[in-house]
Amino acid sequence: MNPRKTLPLLLYILFLLVPIYWLLNMSFKSNTEILGGLTLWPQHFTFDNYRVIFTDPSWYTGYINSLYYVCLNTVISLSVALPAAYAFSRYRFLGDKHLFFWLLTNRMAPPAVFLLPFFQLYSSIGLFDTHIAVALAHCLFNVPLAVWILEGFMSGVPKEIDETAYIDGYSFPRFFIKIFVPLIGSGIGVTAFFCFMFSWVELLLARTLTSVSAKPIAAVMTRTVSASGIDWGVLAAAGVLTILPGMLVIWFVRNHVAKGFALGRV
Image 1 (cartoon, helix red, strand yellow):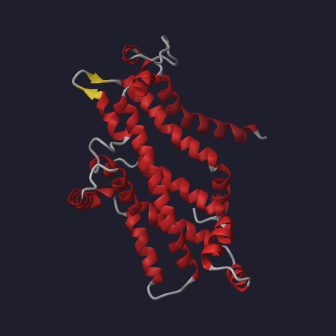
Image 2: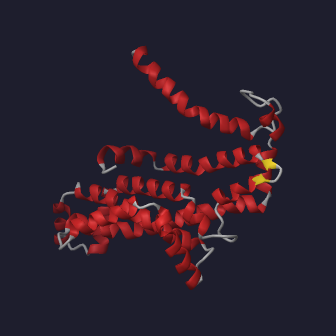
Image 3: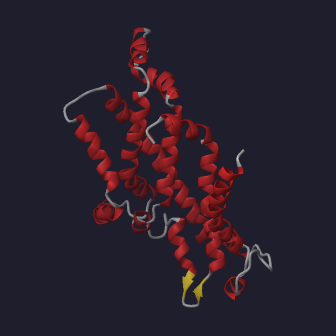
């Protein structure tokens, strides 16, 4: 390989990895060492910051709550988006293009616009501080994104496959699950990845619609700020642990994501 081409790429990758390394570096330091000066690696290596997170229920339940409503949102978004994307891909009806564009406008609007209506609605019907409340709220921007991505994959599948399956006696549910869904497996993997990540990093709705029982980890991390200052070590350890779920999702759907970026509407 040409060094002139690879060197800039390596420098760029190193530049991107610096914040992650520094976060990992801080997570193994005490607060005193972090505030004491600049060190490239821990001088007094410690696991105390991670011990706080794994032994304090208020910390580890934040991760459980976040994973719960994020996975729930991903399942709901895919369940709704698959038939909707199929309809946009296979049928033509009055206002279909306008409706398809309207779905995307929900993704363009900031979550703060819908914050007050969601809060009042969920408080009135008893869904405040529940996992399903956050999962349904995140459907507002994840379902349109999922429909948009999946429609691109489905449009790439020839309609003759549908017609052949009907001639062979397949019912629509059987055809959709056994034949059509495997054909767009890469698209489903890409969609699940984006739904998971957008729901995982969203803070405003998740923090406002919860208080104790379903409080996400992003909201729990604000506990490190107190009158005595910020507990930088625990905050860094919590930040490292919030990266891990995204890395695991990428690992499990890596083949689908690579193919999906090459073929789909991403």
